[in-house]
Amino acid sequence: MKKSVFYSALVAGMLALSFHVSAIGPLSGSSNTEFGNYTLTSSEDAIEFDGKTLETYDLTYANVKTPVKIGVDVSRNCKNYIVRYPSFEIQYVCNKQGLGAKRIYEGFESVHPKIVNALLDDTQLNYQARIVGQMQSDEEALQLIACYFPRLIKKEIRELKSL
Image 1 (cartoon, rainbow, N blue to C red):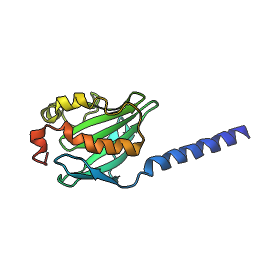
Image 2 (cartoon, rainbow, N blue to C red; image 1 turned 30 degrees about the vertical axis):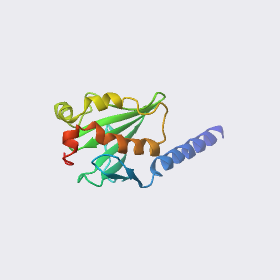
Image 3 (cartoon, one colour; image 1 turned 135 degrees about the horizontal axis):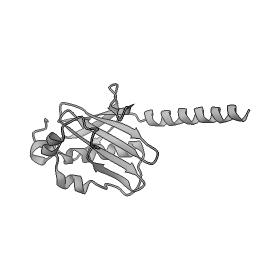
Image 4 (cartoon, rainbow, N blue to C red; image 1 turned 135 degrees about the vertical axis):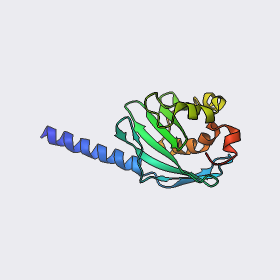
């Protein structure tokens, strides 16, 4: 009897969690960059990371042709938002210390680090190491990423609006 109550509660909790993650509907706003306004929607093309299929979002900008993919990697004490573009990638980590940008962990890159280094604005990476000092909901984190992500790309490249 206790086992069935426990399993029922466990299944209900898992369903509630999966509903929460996938309940994020289309989000939009201004990036305040050359990329223009953004729209975030659920993606049908999931990111694979560390042997897992991640809940994935498409981030489109008004002035950029190719969408950016954001995969949400949930671990015990934090969430990693894996942000991938055909020639660039980065991650945003959300934990007790807040939300901030970091390079993709070595061994999990899908873009060669030399290419990322050529495009990455190191000053912005340092600036974005901690965007906010508290954990954010997925919706808030995704919107912050949509606004901050373009700035990680060197300005002279960003102004071309095509990577």
